[in-house]
Amino acid sequence: MNILMIGSGGREHALIKKLLESPKCTKLYCAPGNGGISRDAETVNIGVMDKEALVAFAKEKNIDLAFVAPDDPLAAGLVDAFQAAGIRAFGPNANAAIIEASKVFSKDLMKKYGIPTAKYETFDNAENAIEYLKAENTAPIVVKADGLALGKGVIIAQTVDEAVDAVKSIMEDKQFGESGNRIVIEEFLTGPEVSVLAFTDGKCVKPMVSSKDHKRAYDNDEGLNTGGMGTISPNPYYTDEIAKECMDTIFIPTINAMVAEGRPFKGCLYFGLMITPNGPKVIEYNARFGDPEAQVVLPRLKTDLVDICEAVIDEKLADLDIEWDNGAAACVVMASGGYPVAYKKGIEMLGMDENGQVEGATVYHAGTKYENGKFYTNGGRVLGVTATAPTLDEALAKAYAAVDKISFEGMHFRHDIGKTK
Image (cartoon, rainbow, N blue to C red; front, side, top):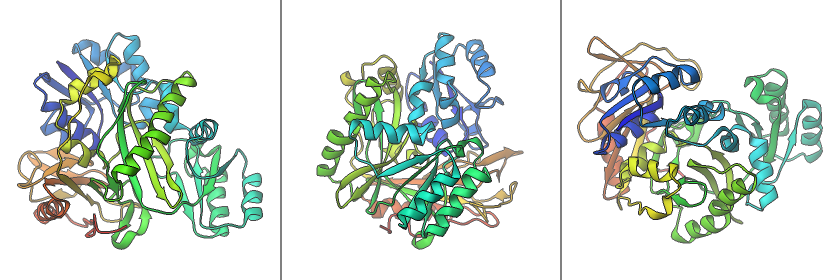
C-alpha cells in the first residue's frame, strides 16, 4: 500500500512511525515533511494547501491512502479533493472540519444539542463585544478568535481591561487575520484539563487513551501559551467514571449532532475537556490529531493504524477491536530559544544519531531540517522526545534522560511535565 501523509510536524512524524509498523505499508511519502521525517519517509516539496498538486502527485504515485493531518487543508477541503479524484483519504470533509475551523459554529452546535460547555456570547464587531465585557465586569474571561489561528487564537484575560485589549487586538488590529472577524467570549472554567482523541466513522465513536497537555512555555505553568510543551498519557484525572460520563454526554452526542446537521464527521475528533466541579465540559474541538498529544497516544496503540483508517473510511469502525498498551507515555518538547515569540532557525543540533534518534526514547521531529548528515532547527517547537514504560514516573525518567543527550544553542524545555495540575 502506498501512503501519502500531509503535514510537516511532530504529529505527522508520530503518525508516520505508527503507519510504518503496518505490514500493509509498502511506501510512505510525506508532503512537505521535515528533516527528521525525511529519515522515515520520502518527503515531497508540495505545500499542504496546494490541493491540485497534491492530487496530481497522489495519482502519479498510485496512492492507496492519503492521510490529511493539519487543520488548514482539512478546512479547505483537501479530503474532498482526494475523494473527488477517487483517492481514499483519512480525515473529515470540509463541511465537518468546520467543527474546528469555526468556534462560533462549534459553540452554537453544543448549545443546540445540549452538550456541556462554557457559557458564551458571539460578536461580529468590537464595539458590542467591549460593551458586553464592561457590562458583565467578570474576570478571568476567555476571548477566542472564530477561525483557525495556529492554536494561538485563544486569550485568557485576567482582567476586563485585558479582555478589552484582546478584543481590539483580534478584531481591530487583525492579529489573526480574517480568523478574527468574529469572536467568542466565554466564561472561564476551572479544573483539570483532559485531551481525548477519538476515532469515528460518523456513526461509531471509539475514544483513544487520554492525555494531558502542558501549554505554558515555562515551568510551574508560567509564561505564554504555546502549541504544547509536553504531554503525558494516561491523564491521571480521567477516571473510568468520568470517561463514561464523557461518552454519554459529550462524545456520542457530538457525533450524532454532526449527523443531524448533515455534516457527518469521519476521522479523528479531538475533544479538549475541562473536568469542572459541575462535571466535564468541552473547551474546544479539533478536527484532527492533537500535537503533541499524538506523540504520547499513538505509541500506546497496539492495533494496526492502517486497519483503523480503512475501517473509518468504510464506516466499519464498530467491527474493529482497538487495543491499547496498559502502560504510560511521556513527551517532553524541546523548543528554540525565544519560542513562542521570536526565535532563530538553522542552529545545529547535537547528540542524535543519523536518523535523528537517541537511545531509550523516540524523537519526533516537529521543526527540523537535515543537510549533509546534520540536523538543524527549523521551527519553534523543534523536537518531541517520547518514552513509554509501565508507569508514568518511569516514562518521564526515560524521556528526560533522552532529552539530556540532545543539545542545541538556546534550547529550552519544561522540567515539570507530568508534575503540575
